[in-house]
Image 1 (tube, rainbow, N blue to C red):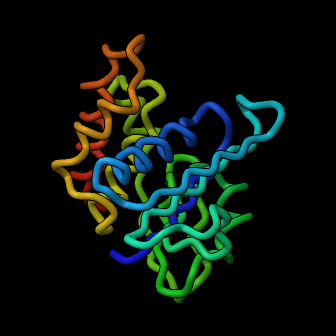
Image 2: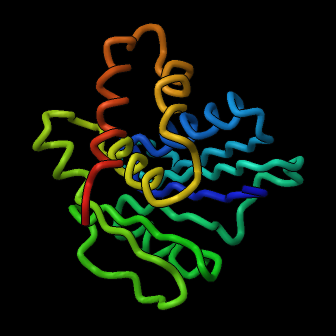
Length: 179
């Protein structure tokens, strides 16, 4: 991996920024050059949220991503807004629980996982983001599986340590999901 540009997008409350932070911490642990740029609307929960992460073997010149290699769309407005930005040959991951339409482009790979439904079925509340990220990990070379727990240990706050194992389990469920 020379440089990988990842764009997470959804609405506030879906854990978009947390997902990006998790991936950024992995990058730090792996001695990568990392950029993490969160963005959210003024209304936070329920408003739009996105997060750009760049993982690179070389210094990152700018945190702005104009052509992501990987798009993670957690809702339809995000897919509508960012689908055309993905680099040709890129990958688009869609939460099929919330997005019925298919990706219209033919020069990218589409991966669909009902992350929100799985989170509900597994009694994992708001961990659809981590289920989705597990699916991304399974279908990209973004990070090795043995780095999930160490990176999660860095991003889960001391006040929420009871959520550490549940987050790791959510990532594993996403990794093991077969389309």
